Length: 238
Image (cartoon, rainbow, N blue to C red; front, side, top):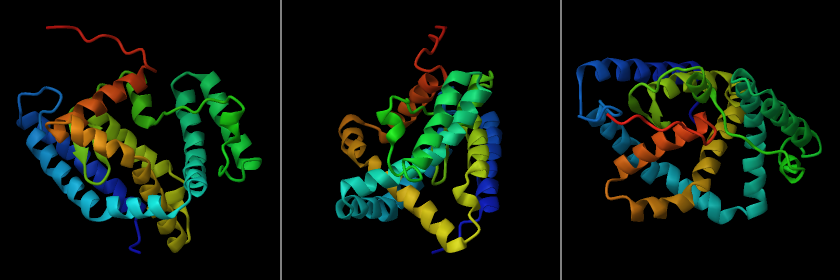
């Protein structure tokens, strides 16, 4: 397996962020939220190609071969790692109650949940949240910036891409010293995440006349709801 270098990935994400900022100042598609649509569609097509040829087939095989309890355990394991940083972001957003719950989930699932493989915390009524550094920047008042499609990582905004840099830098899986173990864990997480999204493929294909626009609009709406915890303010009409 090819070694995935953290520094290289961070530079790649930063490059796309800078490029998006530059292009948004000199190119326009007529859509204020997506001023670099031509560039984004090209990257979207590239990502679709990689997914069709490599990631999706592997995810389908993974989903077909592994028993449901095993796949659930893998998802729970990586979800437990994410819960710690979700708690950190909730704390940075001024939500100490949710942060305490998130860190409590990590404590419970890392111990009696066998390193997070079993999600006892949810059974105990401890809600799982979804936070990241991009959402934290949004809660701090940072604007979205241009919509941008990042190679491999997919749909983002300039703000969320900046948050992604921190997400990647803080990811403990990417800092595992043993290279084969690190690469195996990173690949497993990608495949497991993609397998969880397989049921959505048919819905998107049937609902979308233009898959690019459908994914873009769905992403922007979803991020807005996440940032405001489902209570997003109404946009002002011109």
